Image 1 (cartoon, rainbow, N blue to C red):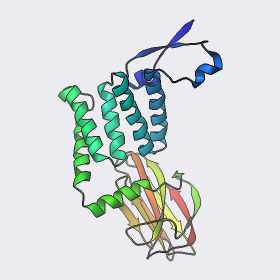
Image 2: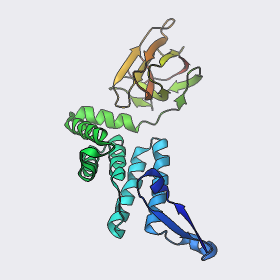
Image 3: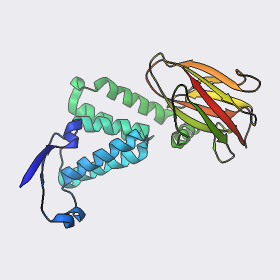
Image 4: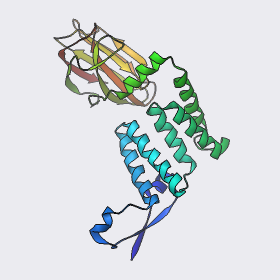
Length: 258
């Protein structure tokens, strides 16, 4: 007796397969057996999706690479959208050569009529730009991508933080904390950083480490206060640091409006 379901991969448009899963065979002992390759691909895709939600792009790329290993070993058919997804994750994981190769593979399959034609070309351009970066700038971007945010902030929230000498360092200057925030297109972000311990300094930073806004003493005394209108919907980062050089140690409070 068996049941049929549409595979997770098919639901994502990556592996258009319908997988028959046998039930009631082997009981608990069957759990320890290896999954059939197509179902293992489903499991890895589910894992990669969660890793991408957690912004752990290095781990997500590893999961997708394991699907490529399955393709090689078991001759699985990977449709074009898989290659586009692989390219996007690879670029986020700071693997521009891999991203470029996968985007090209997508375009080879779909040509100019592919759903993600323009985005794939943009991925290639972004990969080329990353590859052409000076080594120092590329190293700084890679280091930035590895800094785990302290948390995700929402407008109206007030939260306490603390800078310490073990925090990441911004451009060989002060230690900093990295906070994540999601904004809609045109949304106004108002953020204040108050501290009795450090000379507060705030920045709004893009995912590519570009400084979009900054403030030193816009608040009362040496506190910081800035406003930023998001040009498009997406993820932004608030960098809380001090004005000055490291090491830095002290408590602060972030207050978000907007």
